[in-house]
Structures are given as structure tokens and as C-alpha cells.
Image 1 (spheres, rainbow, N blue to C red):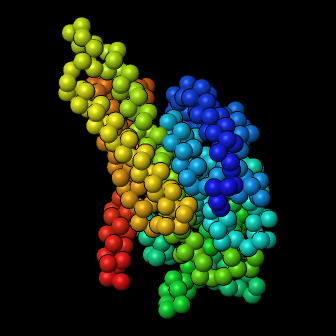
Image 2 (cartoon, one colour):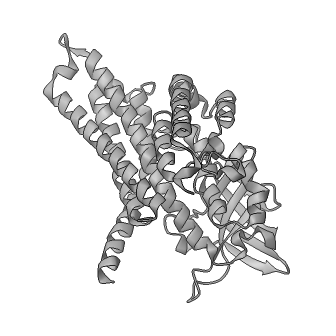
Amino acid sequence: MTTADVGDEDFRDILAQTRHFVRSAVVPREQEILTEDRVPDDLRAQAKAMGLFGYAIPQQWGGLGLNLAQDVELAMELGYTSLALRSMFGTNNGIAGQVLVGYGTDEQKAAWLERIASGDVVASFALTEPGAGSNPSGLRSAAERHGGDWIINGQKRFITNAPTADLFITFARCRPADADGAGIAVFLVPADTPGVEVGGKDKKMGQEGAWTADVSFTDVRVPAGALVGGAEDIGYRAAMTSLARGRVHIAALSVGAAQRALDESVAYAATATQGGVPIGEFQLVQAMLADQQTGVMAGRALVRDAASKWVSGEDRRIAPSVAKLFCTEMAGKVADLAVQVHGGSGYMRDVPVERIYRDVRLLRLYEGTSEIQRLIIGGGLVRAASR
């Protein structure tokens, strides 16, 4: 994809519409999303009509065709509200959809991408397992050839959108890792395939309305055409590339959430009084606001730089990890300061900063923990130096 996919003027319109939708339609209903643990159907329908289920899918397959530099601008807007909204269509555009975009055969793309882009199909990324989280090389799910078909067995955990998924982009080991590759393949497994079983919705600390669940595969038979790219060793590379791209997106989402926490803090500091004086007049409160503002601005600049390097091809490994590490940690600090600025009221369940505090904690864990990002960054720098 190139920046020519969506012109600047068209993109400005898309961004403005998204911002309006988030702030006028979704923000007022955050409490409803939290209480009911679901995104209301009318908001889902609006997101679908706006093309948000396929904003990062190329236009030839019915998507909006945003490149990653445009994707992060959108993500910073989506992060401003309940993260369940973005999660609803995040896997279609991100880690699941991009596997098909980058590695699928023409037949696979024709069969699935238009329906993914329209939101008629929800695609889930089935990688994480009880014994293999941030590092896919520990994968235990197995795929064996059986005549012209493949038989898949294994357990997946914390799979986003699993309860509503129509298609699982499923990673499984087809042989032990060897000199030829990691031995990990990726398959297109429709959710209604016999042997696929989705567990109950996970009860999480935060991100109410964003559904995850375990998925089990028991003697699941899929045809040869379900093997993504038609090659057995594509899985590991597809997972790594898709996750790296997703890390820049998650970094941008973190900036959006941090901006909201900052805005809530400033508004509270300007209006709440202590001893008849707005607390924003107190220097120690101003210092907290200053630290929040500094983190948000640094994160925004870093996200834009990492996205630019991805689009140009200059850096698709270290920069995404740098952005995700800094921005997700920053969002946690900004949310923590937001609760502090609010004092006791910041600990109350109906106050936005309390929700944000819980929501952003997950950002440091999924699509590679902060610890994994440090290993990628540090290891990458040392390897580059030794070459």
C-alpha cells in the first residue's frame, strides 16, 4: 500500500467523520458500554456504514485502503473513547486482516477480504496459547496432513472477538522448527467448522464490551486451500509482520487514551475547588498536568515517526516496538496521574478516568508485552552492530 491509496483530502474527511462519531455518538454512551459489557447494535451499525470494519483493507477488496501513517491518526481518535469500540473492528483491520492482505493467495483474498472489509465477516487472530503468549515459537497447536486436507488440534487463549468471529486466522505447528523454517503454518478456519469450540467470554479487569475467549480445535478438518499463501512456513513470518504493524496501531491507540485522560484531568483541575480555590491553581497539580502533556506529545510524535518508517519500509522491526513500549507505558502513567488529579472521585466507578485506568493496563500486555518489546529493541540493536 502507498500513501496514494487515499488522498489527503479524502482522508481528512474520514478522520473528521470518525472524530465526530467518537465524540458525539460513542463518548456519551461509555457508561452503557461498561454496564452492559457490549457495544450497542446501533453504534456497531454506524461503524459498519462508515467503513470502519475495513479501513486498513485495500480499496480493491472494498476497504478504505488507509496506510499505516493514516491508520495511526484514526487510531488516536478511536483511543479517545471506550477501547471496546476499536476492538470490535480492530482484528478485521489489524492482526487478522493483515495476514490475508499480506500473505493470502488471490483465491483466499477474493473469498474473504470484501466480506471482512464490509464487516459482514468478523475475523479473529488465533495465535496465543496457554504456553505460548508473546513468543509464537512456543506454539503447541498442531496441523497434520490427512490426504488432501489438514487436521488441526490445539487450544487458543484470550482470542479477541472470538465470541462473534466468523473466521479464525489460526496458527498451528506443522513440523518441528528446522533449518528450513519455524514450521508454523496459518490456516483460514470458518467458525462453524466442526470441532471448533468457543468458550465463555473472559471476565477482565477492564475493556468492558471488548470480548475475548478461549477457542479449542479438536480434529478440525480444513481443505488444502485453507493454508494461507499455500505454503507451510508462512505462519511465523505472517504473525511477526502482522504483530509488528499492530504494535504501531496499539501505540497510537494508547496516545488517544492518554489524551482523553489528560483532557479529563485538565477539565477537573479547572473546575474542582479546594478551600474555594480551583485545584488547577496548585503547583503540584500543575506539575502532574505537565507530565501528562509531555507524555502525550512525545507519544504522538513517536507514533507518527514509527508509522512513517513503516510506510517507507525504513524500519518495520525496532521502531514499532519502541513506539509500543513507550506509548503503552506512557498511557499507564498518564492514567495513573489522572486518577491522582481527581483524588477520591477518580477511584469511583462512574468517572471516566477510573475506566481509562483499567482499560489501558491491557495495552502493555497484548501484541507483545513491554518485556518482549525490550528484547526486540535491545536484541535488534546488538545484531545490527555485530553485522
